[in-house]
Amino acid sequence: MAKQRRARAPVRSATVDAPEARRVAVAPEWIVVALAAFGLLLTGYLTAVAWWGTSPALCTEGSGCDLVQHSRWSTLLGLPMALWGFGLYLLIGLVALQRNGRLRRWRRLWTLSLVGVLISLYLTVAGLAALDAVCVWCLLSFATLVAIFVVVVLRRPSSAPGTPWQRWLIHHAIVLLPFVGVLHAWQSGLLEPPENPRLQALAIHLEQSGAKFYGAFWCPNCQSQKDEFGASANRLPYVECSPNGRNGGVAFECSSAAVTAFPTWDIRGQRFTSVLSPEELARHSRFAWNAPRWTASGDEAPR
Image (cartoon, rainbow, N blue to C red; front, side):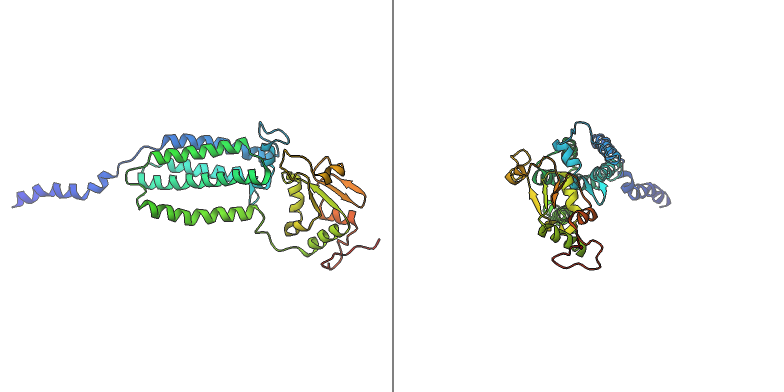
């Protein structure tokens, strides 16, 4: 009996250790790592030129690339959008290098790459809709994320996604679609704080005093001028000079006023072709900027 017990001991030990034996390290997803490394170089370069205040190569002044790179769509929470992309590529690369848990690694790569594709798609569509322009560097990053997503899908483990596909997709849709919606609301200025009474009064005063603000929807400086007024921007006496698209004809009101640069301000017979601060606009239009209170119609300073 003692001999039989000693003979069974190794068999029992092998059974207990079987799960550990099945935890075999898997090779990193080298194709994904390579694509993520390319994305890091790309977004790192775009982040550097954004911080240096210069334009990327191939982005000549006035080109679609230049317009996108200097628009509100190129930043998020005060940081270059390329920097957020750099962080995403870094996460993807680190996850692709993991050697344990092939299914878990696949699930994470699928989610991260899908997030990147959706955000890049949104930014591309937003640039076309808001600026009538696209950026070749942004399209290159978009193509890189699509390539990563395709590779991840093609290299799916047989057990993936680990839950029924319908539930897997619904869970992602519940999270990602509202996320893109919030991103759009933020980038479009829909989440701006309430109107500042002084800026509101100044905008109304400019309208009532006959001032004109000539601009174009695709002009980054025009958008910067509107941003000076926050939620009161829609009260400005704005004249759209490109109603037929970026390559369309100039509006008659702008051509008849001999407007050749954007933005152009026409205030009390004076013309200014630059972004003006609210204080400057108040001074040129004789608005009581330092008055203790402002009414809905705006107050003029004594002449």
